[in-house]
Length: 576
Image (cartoon, rainbow, N blue to C red; front, side, top):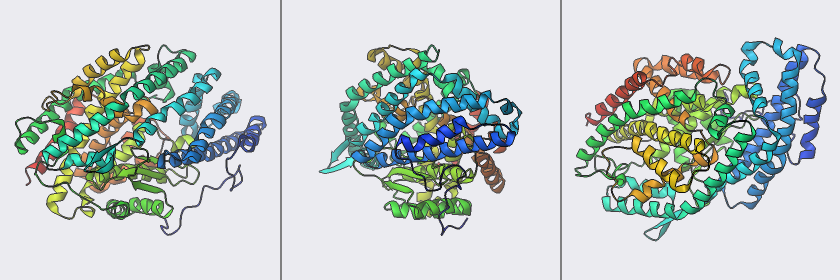
């Protein structure tokens, strides 16, 4: 790959190379062509499928750019208008045509003769979409998409004042790593109190979304939105019961390990009582690590770090930088969080995040960099389904990159002691991810299988579920009001319901790959790349097997992986 030359957009065989989506009247002729085109031979059918995929890729890329621009500045009225037009005007018309085209594909006698090795995953997805389609849900999807974005808008305006300076939530959170315990407690209370002010608006928003989603589910013949969404997400390779197994395994095998590590933290900090504002500070008592200074340095060091693992990884980030596909700094008005946004037509994704010069940002950049590499490795697939990975696979790419790059984090921290501290922090967060994922997922199961619940019932359910997975060592006395509303911070609950357990499944997979990396580094990285290169051309379990690991949530497997991580952390702790 020539890093000095931006990759060209995919060659188009159906749409003009310079075609841009503006209004429906320009887009409609291509849908009409596909709807009317005769299919008489297998070659006709394959070309029809690829033309349809090309059209979808161009549309998806334009929609994704509109989302990106709105993320960059929530106050940009033109960006909001463009995004709103896409969701409110274009999406409903596209959905109607997509239904017609999907039906045409399934009804075509030649479809059954297609090579299953090439088209199985694609056709399985099409048939699933057809089974869920209800015309009356189209306006509900539009309404739901617009409402869900209100969560990001609310959070983009939340700031606190610290020493006369306005700070975003991301910037304020970094202060929880400061050595001054009184400062940490002050920041913790300031952030939580500010979030409490947003609770009424967030509860109202959640109630509206729950109502719309339940209506969507019942329209499609389901008793609840959980069962509908499971099918809509294409969860062909595991069941609701598997999710429950995951919850149970995390509670029984991971929470006790975290309790042990929290006791070590309490001792190392010399505290009688460990409080929530003590969880980010380094137990060495030293000032927070500052692995970079500003977004340009983050980019430079990330390229170096990832290239040392495999040169190709660094080249991917370098290309994105050259194409201005990176926006990494935190600023007022920018939506919170971070993501890697696929751009399926050009084949070079966009990374969005809110960096504040912390180790957390290094982890985020490595995570999104893993997604980015995944996009590069699958950019040449012609079937849209092949490069639109389900999250169980996509998050495996991202979470594994976090762990595989750790040996090269001296690109950010060239002091051995600082590097050791960073690795301990990272591995503690890897473990901490699992109970939080289980908490959010189990809470969502409750949310959507109890339609019509009251705010009070929701609070009770959250407290009960949160209690199953929280640390038994951290003292939260007097903080009940804050903890009652912790779930409001989780964007996924509002914007992408049920997309969260994938992080936990993928985290287990990432730990397993890293365990293999400890035994045979070169082979583990090679298998990781080959698994990612498969995109979504095989079932999830097969792709995990290609990486040399299992897609497994049993307590025995979780216990094995938990013990491995615990030993790695303890080795680092006692290395000092």
